[in-house]
Image 1: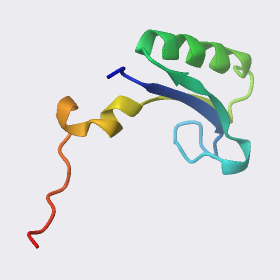
Image 2: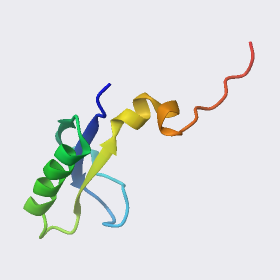
Image 3: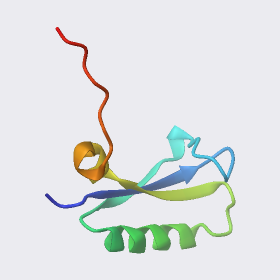
Length: 80
């Protein structure tokens, strides 16, 4: 399985936080390597460098899709 990465951004209330304005989300793309995602993130972030309320992030989708393989355990389901 590819290690998928999502790059998106938008306007945030606090530049140090991740509270995005859902009406301003910019979906940059999904990439099969961190290097490609980082390049896309860097390009998007540099286009908005003068706007302190704009922020772009890289999300490791592969960690969400296969959490056990990355050392992230899922909550235990109660026995039926």
